[in-house]
Amino acid sequence: MANGVAQDISEVEEAVFSPIRSDDAQAIYRLKRENLEIRRAVAPLTSAAELFVARNTPAIPSDLVADFQDLGEHILRVHEQVDSQDALLTTVLTASMSRQSLQQNEDMRKISAWVAIAAVPTMIAGIYGMNFEHMPELPMKYGYGGALALMGGVCFGMWRAFKRSGWL
View 1: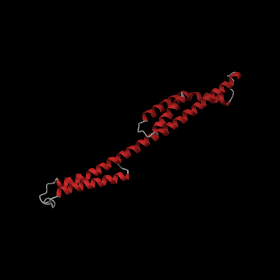
View 2: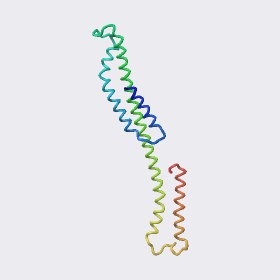
View 3: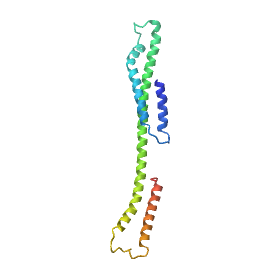
View 4: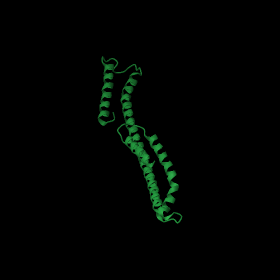
């Protein structure tokens, strides 16, 4: 059973570090739960296993001592394997959460860049939307066209700068 969990851990570990974006937290918690159940089953046996490995118990017939020592060593190995699997699962869970956090940070950068790009024309249009009676560009032939060109140019410049910096 512990070997089956080890195989599942390997699969989840590969999924966490694959380039495909996925949420593996549920699978990791499920494996931690399975590992905990194995630990609960094995833990009471370890003290008896240590007795078998450490010394000969008078209640055990001499022809079975080697078998019981082998059984005790096997139980101790399973207990150690369960402990190492738990540590590995904790590490994989931490790595999964770190990857999700990095992805969220990247998403927030993109959202922030788009908001910054949208803020410039919003501000310029807001000024023009105040309906001033005496604005210098009102009598100009290309005043509004120039304002629209300014908005487009600034937005394009910001988009290009964000694209170069890796934010978009």
